[in-house]
Image (cartoon, rainbow, N blue to C red; front, top):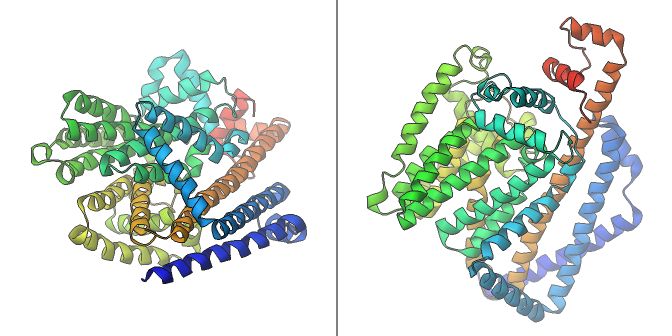
Length: 515
């Protein structure tokens, strides 16, 4: 594409942003139409008037985003040279800062703060479903440390997760809002390890920081970060990433200490979340694609540990309701369909809801995968091959679930996906946005819009989850004041209008936490 044509496209895009900014400003001045939102959300949604108010807030946030984009576009059109000089100055300062010894600490602090801003709505969310049962289990663990080896809560052998929740609930004294600190902080540290892993894989600073930002603001699996009980997958993911980073360091520097520590963390990881077992195949694949010939079989001990753990879990789960009720099935057809569904949901926000209305999208995603994977394996670089196969490996442990697509399962697969998208953006930048100031500014504006739009979606998800916790709080108070419902529970009957399962409701009534 000729440079002038690309410049023209850049100017047209910036002009479009100016128009969007004016429309956003008009919405802010006039205010969202309350009658429209009342009809759309109060009637069609189970979340009532509260979601109506908060959706109005989300629309205002989105309108503010449009105004900011329009102002940026006006500045870019008026002063392209000065903006590029400022961008170059910022790039040099950033690069020099990252090369210093304290660079990693600065990146860590930045990513934790970035995650806290993205998930600020989480600090308004109370206790939700499994949280009540986990509180009861952690009380038992405090009294009897041996309880961490039981299957009473998670139905799996997860002693490290039991330990994590025990420390978490005791540290913050069952304050639901403070409990979110650990989940958000762990997510920020996981973003740091995404940065370190991407830097180790590519040796490109800007690819690594782009991947970390995309991961920190990844909106699809936001409930994993915002749900107190769900933060166990964030905790397990941090173990996964730290173990994988140490393994990559071993491949690069051949220091045995890195390897041993990586293997130890892997063992802890599979005792926190079964999905961490996919790290075994990832290390095996990295040994073949990303290292010298002498290290190709470095992942084999991880595979041996994984096989042992699989047999152990199968013996533990013998007779489990997961297998008896066909919730977890090794049916090949189910697993293939899930690959299509989860791939679609990974890339499209709220894509799991679209799959309910349009199931054919699973088949469409499978066709794309069937075409893309052979092309990548034949024509792609070793890094691209690894990232695509790593994504498929990260998905594998969840593909046997005979359930609708669950977005929270996409937290681990987002590791590879965020680095892969950053790689694609890097290719676009070097091939399309290489020289012209307008094209560089368009690229920067597009990336900022992508991140900010993710912020808005995370906020709306937090609003929805906050209302769910308020609904649960009100229902628990209602049950406590209703003798008939209390008698039904004592007889083992769950009220038909309960938003909680029987076990969760019993735990909430027994503990009476600060909701």
